Length: 247
Image 1 (tube, one colour):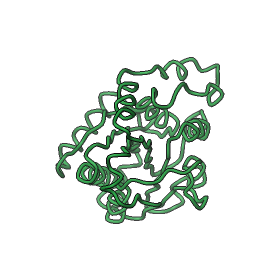
Image 2 (cartoon, one colour):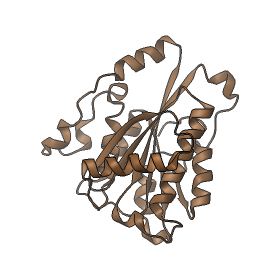
Image 3 (cartoon, one colour):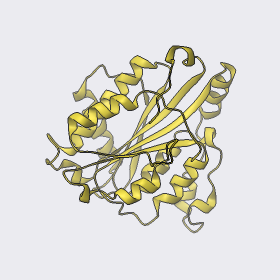
Image 4 (tube, helix red, strand yellow):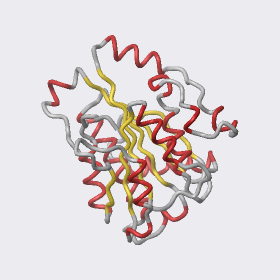
């Protein structure tokens, strides 16, 4: 990953809107990842949010929690290291939306896309089956997107759009997530994927590499992180802005 240099000079020209996609399926409670896979993911996400808020206060970070279904939390600026408040927020939303226990990457990516629909334009209907009316129906533009885009343009700022998806397993949904990932990437969104587990075999690395964007060298922006400490460090690093490249 190539971080932006001369941050002070560029901060008035570029802002980022990012969604952190956090796998909340049943296997995330496994303790082969001390203290658990889920706890490690939450600690890393919190580190990202607070680091981003300190470095680039104008950037926006939202959360998408997912299992069989997904929920989205609007952009937060800072939690000041309050892990318990962050944990309670995520758990509350998971119960409220009854997201299930299995893992569906497609719905996670789709929910993230809803966070900036006006910035991306309408979805390419070829990316998903025309017969699935429910999936098409959720892509209704939400208020605020065009206003945010106009404000950024008026301020002379470029908007970088990123998704960071963390999972510990395999996609068990019926719709191939590669199609919606392709639509997102062609719309200018950079997708980074993180695999966590006690063993690489637990993670569908091949699929995650297909979902991920590529860097300037053509390498997928996919990373397998073996422990919580390394994961937190990785997320702190990823809070820096990156230069987008054509996917």
